[in-house]
Image (tube, rainbow, N blue to C red; front, side, top):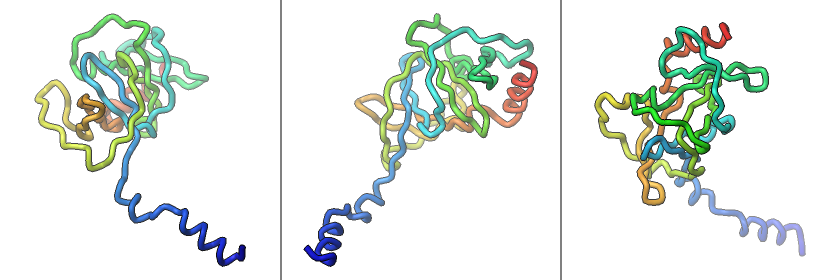
Amino acid sequence: MTTEQTNTTAEANLPNMSDTDSIESTQFLTFMVGEEYYGIDILKVREIRGWSDPTQIPNAPEYIRGVINLRGLIVPILDIRRRFRMDEIEFTAQTVVIVVNIAGRTVGIVVDGVSDVVDIAAEEVRAAPDFGTSIDANFLEGLASVNEHMVILLNADEILKSCELTKIDEIAETA
């Protein structure tokens, strides 16, 4: 086979890039809080850990459970139930902490359980309706249907406002 024939054969096996370019999707880690499914961009996720009691810090906002030492890094633990003004529950063996990077900071988010990593195409994401006071709409990227469940896609960088991030920095320095 000549070099010219080899190149033609290789080109014939390449996918048509124009077909795949239009299908942009993002991977989301899905998790449960109460009966609802939430998703967060997988690129924000650093790791998933089982629940263990953090060290409580005086004068921290009520939704900050405390801090943990993650391989020498002090990580504030945010209770998403408290942040979204939901009823509190007893933590179980399924309760986990999703360690994420939010606005350049590492923060742990306590959730009831992790579900799956899913691909969601941009065209499948719908605008989130106004939830009133239970969830700040700025926290949401949108909604998507995944395996017969509605998934609320969170904007990780908006979960904490800049003034709250300053407070978290102070907490981490104190610890």
